[in-house]
Image 1 (cartoon, one colour):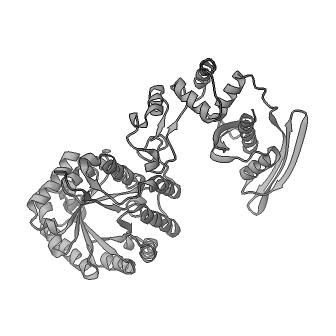
Image 2 (image 1 turned 90 degrees about the horizontal axis):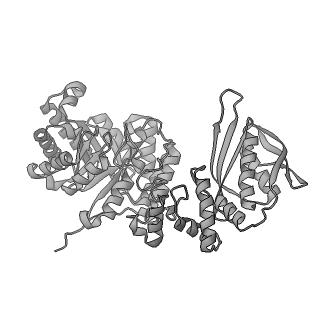
Image 3 (image 1 turned 135 degrees about the horizontal axis):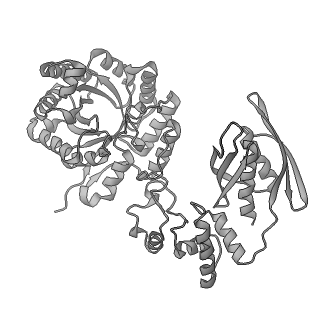
Length: 505
C-alpha cells in the first residue's frame, strides 16, 4: 500500500529572523513588498517581526497584519506580559493571527542568561502561553536552544506548554549545533514521551552554523514534525537559517522518498529570491542550490552533450519549475563541439562539419583567454571563418558630460564610423552612465538591455585606471563590453561601443 501524502506547513521567518542578519534591515515598504511576495509564493505562515523590538518592527507587523491576507501572520514575543500584549496589539487586525512566544530552556541559557531554575522556566512558559491564548487560538511556543536542552526537561516543558494552550510547539536548533541523527532523535523522543503531543503541531527551526539546517529539518520532518521554519535564500543570524527554496524543492524532487507536500508555488522561488536579495543587499552566491546563477548552468562538454540529448542526464529538476527561463549551457574552455553547434544553430548559423571543426579550434583558443564566451564572440568567430566582411567599427571621438544633484544629466557626444562623424546632444536619463547609454543608442540605433554593469580599479592610486565591464542583450542575444580609462564615463562609453561593435560585426 502506498504511503499517504502528508502536508507540511511552511513557516517563513524572512521578515523576522532573516532581518536579523547583519546589514539586512528593511523599512516598512520593503517588508510589505516581501510579505505580499510570500503570500503569492504560497507560504502558510509569515512571521512578520518582533513587535516589541522597536516602533518600526511594531508598525511593520501591524501593517502586514492589516494588508496581507492568504497566510497566517505571526509576531514573536518573549514569555512576558509586555511582549505578548504588544504582539497582540500589532496582530489583532490579521485575518489569521498567531502569537509566537519563546523562552530559553538549555542548561547554558538557564545558568548564564536567564539565571532561572527548571521549575521557574516551566512556570514562566505556562504563564506566557496562557496569556497569549487569551488573545488568540493560534499560539506557538518555542523552547529556545532546544537542541542543547536535556531531553527529559524538554519533554516536560513541551507537555506543560501544550496543556497551557500551545497549538504548535517549535523545536529550535538555535545555534546550529545539531546533526540530522541528533535532531531526528529529539523529535522521535518528543513523540514517544510527551503524552499530549498529538494536540499540537511539531515545528522545526534550524540554523545553518554547520551547514546542516536543511538536512536537520528533513530529519525532523521524517520523524513527524509537521511544520518547517525557513527563510528565503536561507538568510538569518550568523550563517543563516534553513533555506525555504532548498527544503521545498528537496521535498518536491524526492517526493518518491518523503511523500510530503507543500502548497508552495515553486515557479515563484527565483523571483522571490531576487526580490529579497535586491531589498536586503545580500546577493545570492552563484553556486547556491535552486536559485543561484549556476544552479542550472553547465560548461563541461560531457555534461552539455548529455543535456542536449536528454536534460535529466544532469538535471534532477527543471529550471522552469523554480522560475528560471531555461537551462544555461555556458560556453567556456571546458565546452565541447555539441554545445558550440547548438549555440550557433540557435543564433541562425548552419555550419557544415568542416566549418564547425575549424571554428571549434579557434573557439578553444579564445576560451583559454576568456572565462566565458558570449554570443557576440561566437558570431565574430563564425563570420570570420565564413569570410563575412565586418562592418566598420564605431569609435569614440569626443564627449562632454554634465551631472549634478540638482541638474539633469547632459551629454554631448561625437562618434565616428569610417570617415563619418555623428554628433548628439542629450539631456535625459538618471545620471552620467544612463545618459551615456542613451546617447550612444540614439546615434548608433542599437537599443540595448543592460544586464550587468561593474566598475573596478585596474591600477593603484587616486588617478587609477577604471575598468568597466558590462553585459548587454540585443534581440535575445548576450554581448559583453569592456572599456578602460581614468575617466569612468569614458570607460563606460568604450565598453558600450565594444559591445555594439560585436553586434555590428
